[in-house]
Length: 83
Image: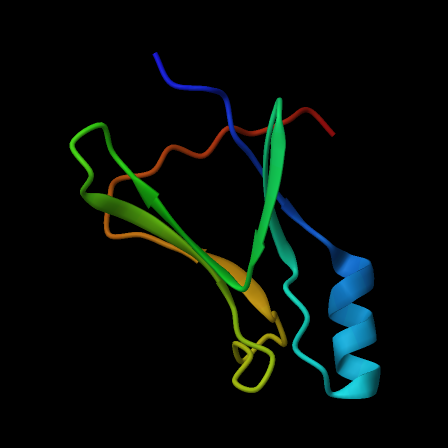
């Protein structure tokens, strides 16, 4: 079994990039022994096929204003929380 990975979006860097026009990486992929940074992450299945992509697009945000989102063609399941 492979190591657990946590994909973290750094909102402070998104704000900094928005103010300064820079393009510092906003996505961190964390494991127990490393942090890797980027502006996109491709999530793959056990066979190496892409199943989803985490996208940071500050110059072309979604119509709602989002600068970071996840894209997939796979089926998803929504888990609702009690509010």
